[in-house]
Length: 186
Picture 1 (cartoon, rainbow, N blue to C red):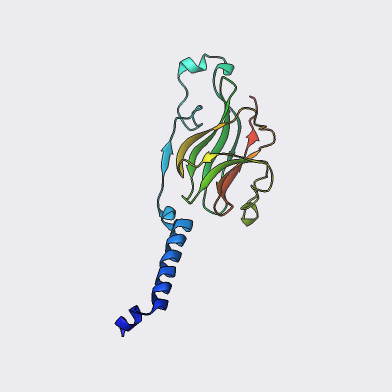
Picture 2: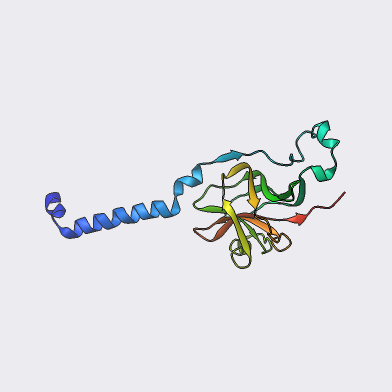
């Protein structure tokens, strides 16, 4: 009986279609990324507030001779649990970088770091808004855990781009986002 089934073309066509479907599904969804992490620990321009005080040599320098946090915010969760701090740091040369501090989110297919003009909204209503207005992709997410830096191109209007999202480009959904509020001078 089995030998007779294997000689039928419909059985072979069905087997090939099933194998192709399984392969395409694995490629598209990449389910193993939900249980794997990639940790990145790049050196940050400004030590996180919980860190020890900067060395005395830095304290004696004028503020303009040190990198400064100009905007920052806490991540909120969207499609996946996400936590950490996003901050824009102005370097002594006037350039800007986005730093993700203590980021923790799920791994996923095709994750990107986006600056956006869209407000950060909690809940399901905030999952898909970041591709609606102006946005700037800073690159692929380097890792789903740890500290990382992304250069912001010169001339970027940071007054317009007031939020950051960990964006899954494949499924057009935010894993998590943070509003970037201006730092108060003090």
